[in-house]
Amino acid sequence: MASEDEEFTMLFQDFYPSLCRFLECLLGGRAPLAQDLAQESFLQLHRTAWGTLPAGEARFWLYRVARNMAINEFRKSNTRYRLFDRVAEAMRPRTRNPEQEYETQEQQTLVLEMLQTLPEDQRTALLLREQEQLSYREIGQVLNVSESKVKVDIFRARASLRERWSKRVKTAGASVS
Amino acid sequence: MNCNFTEKVSSLIDGELSPSDAREVERHLLNCGECQQMRADFLNLRSQIAGFETSLQPVVQNRALKKILSTPRRAPAFGLQWSFGKAVAFASLLIAGALMGFMLYQSSNSRGPQSGREVVAVNEPTPVPSRSTGSTGSTGSTGQQQQKPEPEPSPAQERQRRKQSAAQVSSKTSVGA
Figure 1 (spheres, rainbow over the protein chains, first blue to last red):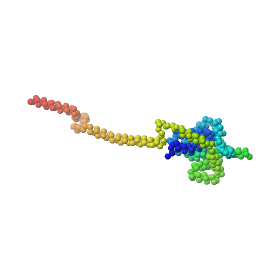
Figure 2: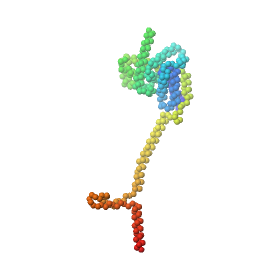
Figure 3: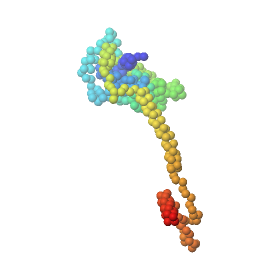
Figure 4: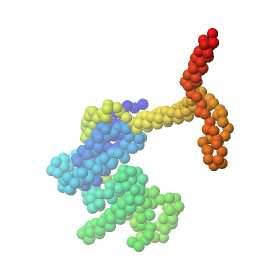
């Protein structure tokens, strides 16, 4: 039987990258901050709650805590990048294919910009659904809201993004022509 | 969009509809171009959001894990580590103990008063039957005089009376001699 540290390490390896991705999208692309908050969430879990949560609950606990930390960050610093974040982004190692890297970066920037236009609860619900494949019931558990609210938030988020995306495509098409 | 099925299309792609509702929406999609386009746009958004790649580097991930595992855990109150399972087991034991104590108390109470009654019954003196048979205390209604029955002498009075009669007998005997 695996020790508690071994079990924790397995959970960390499984969910730390996806928690970072979730937070990056939630925060509008602030990768170093997202990684810090993800680390802090796991640290809190390890220090206080590990071994006390029912089986399978640790993941939901992590996303709940991480989301609350992100909300606190919104209140502190609005949407401005901190200087350190910008430097860290510039120093990030690049792939060998600059063109592919550029396209990927453009696409991801667009996704982040679109997501930032949504209210926080719609954005969070949509990210948990599309990136983590959580059910409406599980999303409700993480966010402490009803399933029907989750359903409505996800639909509204999609409808709003769909409209902006189509306007963006039309604008890009008009500029090319 | 005027279609009433738009929100259901969102739930359909999430697998959150009942089988009968899902069949109904699928039938509708065969005939509604607007909803078909909406489903395609929602699925495209999903691929964009789910395809977002985090900029997390393995070295950062490993460093975060080492830092977390090296941080000591905070001890719970009173130095006891309680898991959910242990707390439930302890609570069950307390409830079982309380129920057993209550049942023992009830059974001892139901036996107790009877033995008291028995003691009282043994200790109570046997009442002496009354000498007069007539009604007591009434003197007037028929004009006849009715005798009030003599009160029973107490044991002390009885002993005194016997002493006195013995003394009288001995004094008569001494005079006659």
